[in-house]
Image (cartoon, rainbow, N blue to C red; front, side, top):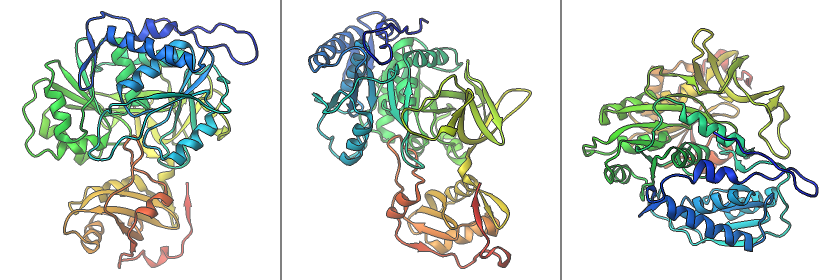
Length: 491
């Protein structure tokens, strides 16, 4: 696969992105063949015509090679066409999730300073949708600047644990990830189909769904309604071997379907984003009788390791071309350059290694990677180590609990969505059977729902969670006396 080259231009700044990669890597192929499925199928010829029209409109707004644009669009054909058009011009595209508030969007635009903004009216409420019908408009952005770097794509991190980071990826980096997907066993191939619930604004849905499908000749379909029934009806709409692509939240939606139809074309599901609890994994595979594969990745890198057939669960094999090591219990990824733009934590990348902030191990004999959760989930209670991920998974598995998040402030706190009829006393009693006293939450917050990021990840920012709480319940069985008043240090 040809990597994008860089050619010089007059004036200061980096060389602009060579736009030829868009046609060579993404828009080639038989013109009459459908490649995307929204309400109606979109052929490659139709997509090429649409991209060309959007390219003209962006050029009319002043976007040039080496320029910068921000796309504030919901998942839609409009988002796909405008993204490819920006790249085809040779400009940098920043993707902003449509679910950001106006305040958050304005703050992001002030940080990114794009020359052109593509946006659409806010989408309505109601059931979650896999795509929307967008009537976009293009406007110049006051104070916008050309791209300061040669990156083709700018994304914001999920923000599940704090302020979002600005992450840049070059065209060559995107092409390399597309090539990794082509070499991973179990990834859909030409003539097969992906039904994606993963947002195209974020890396799993963007590269694992959209870019891989366009390059490999995979048919990519989006469910109109992101409910269990809506997802399954999209699977049923085509005869091709079909893989679902989503996050653990979507697995749970599918396990709630009382009587799923027989779908012989459904071959499996690939999930990314967070660790899948054992109970959720077993419920899905028992109900549908297909494989549930796992994928570990980051916005900064894309796909890092996979186990698409469940052969190594809970471990994963590094993706082709990816080098993973473990230093002091933290997973690190070999990267030639820092992926971060602007001011940030300089310790996240140094000497060719990206710190993931994820705990894990790498088997010295097999190279298999075991992801153990965020490093900030490891805390010390009175000198005793507690893994908040273990506590969270234990609480979420209780029959009285529908969902849970565990965080650490001055003590361990749990935010819990109880099932109907379940109260704190019942949850507390169950936990006493399953967790040692020092591991159990000091504060138990019962909530109607838990906040999630735009990608479906549970938010673990204590300030956001407090806004969702109904007031804490303090379990009657407090910590043992020798732990009371002990310092609690985040490790």
